[in-house]
Image (cartoon, rainbow, N blue to C red; front, top):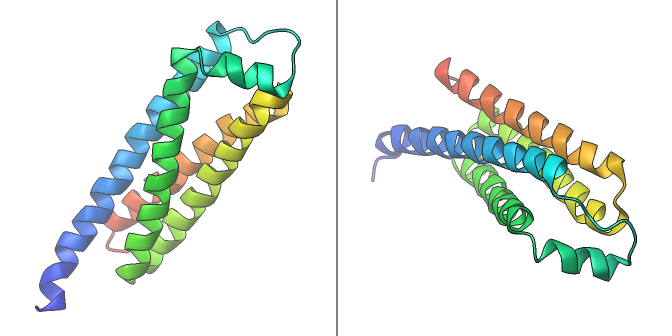
Length: 144
């Protein structure tokens, strides 16, 4: 099969997946803010107590599920970019993946420690990932 006929489909797939990542990141950010404002963690407890609390909170479970989906989506977007030899997409999706991983680490670390800095890491890394994917889409529109 002629690879030039595959390129537009591959590029369209990258754009669609990046758009999906933007939607997912937006939803994730909103859920994170709602959780931050309206879910009160216990004042004291062990890491096990805090994780037990988390698994009884629908909003937090949704936040974790979406975050895990975003992690797999970010990995998939990097793989598609590399396979397609799309340098601009490799850069934007690579940055996006690093930021999603940092946000995920922030969340996993926040639960047992309840340290505000890890909550901030989640928020800032999510915004940075959003910007990375938006940059990829903007560059794709310019024929990167």
